[in-house]
Length: 122
Image 1 (cartoon, rainbow, N blue to C red):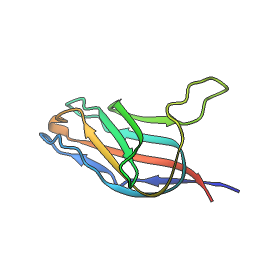
Image 2: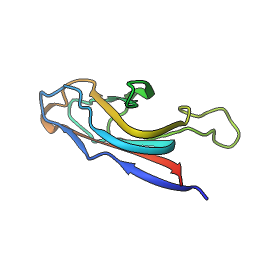
Image 3: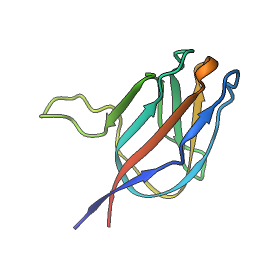
Image 4: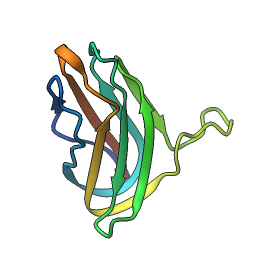
């Protein structure tokens, strides 16, 4: 039977004035069927772009304009038979790179971003 595992990146944070992308890595093994991104409320109303690449540099997932002040769930499966999946499920068995790029300066509050994958596999 396949089990579901939650794989979480360490929380990423940007101080006021910092806009550079960060690219932490995480071992991902299985089929990713859900991605949750939580961006803190920030005075700069910064959104983010998330790109996940495999060890060969191929893009497995990318999403721009992830909203601030929300925990957003992206699903690889359609909901109730409609064609509303947010992305195609992807397979991984390696270290993946998660490039997180804020849309601008988070201003005085700074911003934190949490990313979690829900992966099916033995």
